[in-house]
Image (cartoon, rainbow, N blue to C red):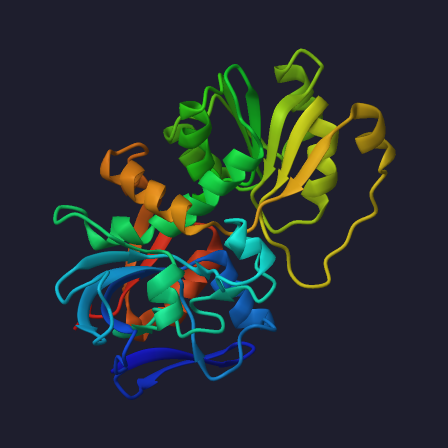
Length: 349
């Protein structure tokens, strides 16, 4: 099969590799779509301690089951499935408590386990038994199903942040996954959604998808503007959906007393900022992280996509063949597109 193999920092090569073969508890999925995530870009440029080259990366995917091991009963050949990222080990304290995204081993597809920037993906027994693999209906396009993974991450973050009726929510970062937060917090009862972003292009996307206020932080003081939009008090909930450490400090200055702050976007390794923790103390802020999701979030995300709540189609803007994965990465990094999807069986000849 053809696969995009990560070989080390800034090195990825599309090459022929052996076709995967399912053993007793495994399945093989023919991958029809795999979206490019910001974490794929971070792996490409900076590496990751859980990714040992050579490795196939990519974890927002969907496809068709083409082979099942003899012990597999959950899936059969021909099943259409969406595939997430985080795989619980099933044995540790966190997995037993149902919060496998906090597993200390932290297995994930496209990390320790081969990912989906390939024509086929082998999903091992642990992933089949406990991981985020869920059947999708015959009418759900594969491209849309692949975005169940980032939407699942949004569901985890909004759940932890306890978004509730009447909240004003600020989202710092208008990339595709940041903008996915908007319809979810609306469903949870937010009455005002403010999006902060440097890029005017991405602010256009925010406006078209229903942001009440879109603030260009490159042109005005975003903290002052948020205060202005909230009667001087600040927002009830702030999400940092970006890779800039400085926005963590900004979030605390934009927040209302007793607000919830979700540090949602992952940062490059070694990132740090100076932080006045008195802000947290005197404003009684609740600051939390949000990392990945659990299989139940992935299942719920599929149900929401099927119901068009949200309509996921506007979040997909470009498609690439597997051979053009570098161009797909470059477009993702340019911040000029929404989610970029690689279709491993696509040919642009």
